Length: 194
Ligand code: AP5
Image (cartoon, rainbow, N blue to C red; front, top):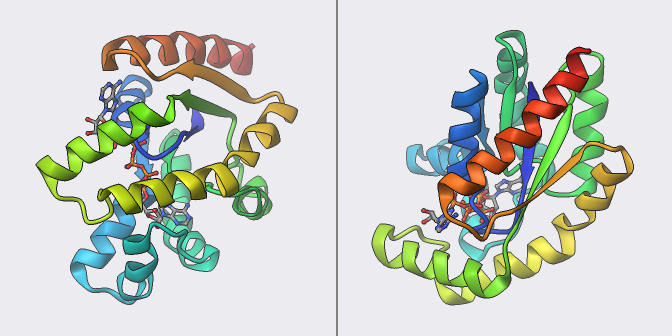
């Protein structure tokens, strides 16, 4: 299976991606986690990405595409992937499709996690207090949600028009969300293999 998760900051992409990847025996690839590792190691990607991330803005496409190319190809050869946090814009989706289609690595299904803004803010403020992620401050959280609404939400129509979108209510206990996603993805998997 090759799938991706779409959802606002705090919607539960990382939480669910880990579980979905385990269920299907595929790799979990998180653009945010990879970028944070680069920042922590002080690599050239990390140094160029840090200010954008601290502000809650999107990192330039070329940086993200370069960073993801190898892991996505490797995961495709090994059986598939769950992409979490990429693509973030229609432009990233189109560019990724152009690269991936010739390699048999293009996405088969997108999963949308729907959660209302008040819940998103509450989850991220709580995480900020516990885990201290530098972009989990009230001001940056609100900016990240605004960036999602402006830049990422158009992706929903992009995948819906391609008939590859599964929508799940993410405002429920973690296990219920996982169960709901997996039930729908198992249906898609049967369709893909028929
Ligand atoms: P990224 O790391 O992708 O952050 P994000 O989209 O803001 O998402 P989060 O990690 O905050 O939330 P999530 O949806 O993964 O939820 P989670 O499971 O963690 O990106 C960070 C930055 O990197 C971006 O701002 C940008 O600068 C850059 N970037 C990344 N990708 C990029 C790209 N493609 N292009 C350009 N720039 C890019 O859960 C959140 C919290 O809620 C946790 O505490 C969790 O325990 C809790 N929680 C989860 N599910 C539930 C539930 N069902 N009930 C109660 N609590 C829950």
